[in-house]
Figure 1: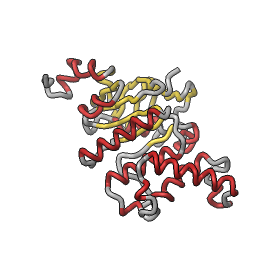
Figure 2: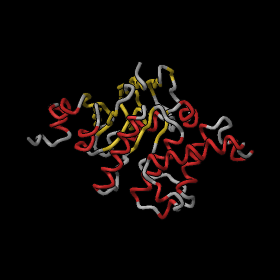
Figure 3: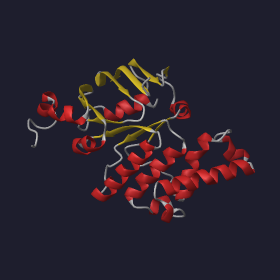
Figure 4: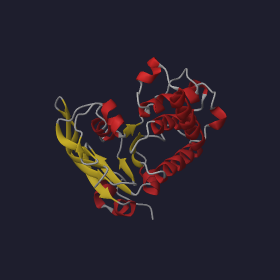
Length: 253
C-alpha cells in the first residue's frame, strides 16, 4: 500500500485553477520530487495534502485512510509532517528548545504537558529525544544558540529537526534548499538521505530540476497546476513534454 495517494486533486481560487486533476502516489521509503517552475502549483499541492487549505475536488489517502480536508494538527498526529518554503522557527528560543517543541506532539499528553508540567519520566524521555535529534542533524555546536543567530542554512536544518521531533512517517519538505549556498544544500540533502534511511518517506518540492534528478527516486513534474510527467529521473530527462516545456527544448548531453 502506498504511503500517500493523491487522486484527481483540484483547487480553484475564484476562477483561477491552481491545481488541476492531479494524481500521484508516494511509495514507502522513497524520496519523491515534486518539481516545476514558480507558479506550477507545487506549494498549493502541499497545502492541500497537509490540510492547510481544502480541495475543490479530489481525494487524499494516507496509509489507505481518506484524510481529505483534515486539519493540519490531525495530519501531524497521523505522522504527516511538513516544513515551509519560508523558514518557520521560534527565533527567540535556543536550538534545544525549538526541537523540544516538535517533540511534544509525541508525548502521551501532547502540548497539554507544557501547561500541566512534565513527569520525571516524560522529561527524561524528552531530553533523550532532543539529544538524539541534535546529534542526528549535526547541530551539537549550536545547542544553546538562539535560532535567530544561526546561519540561514542552519535555520533550515533546525526546521527539519523540529519536524523530525514529531516522529513523521511522511516528511514533506517545501523548497528546503531555497537561499542556501551549494555547501549548505549538499549538507541538507545528505540529511534528507539519512532521514530516509531511518524509515521516513520523503516528498520534496523544489524548482531546481537538476538537484531533484540527482537525489530523488521518482519525479512528478507540474506545469500550470497539471501533471506534465511522472517517472524516474532518466525517464523525465528524456520526456519530450518536459524537454519542450521545462528544459527549453534541449537536453545537455
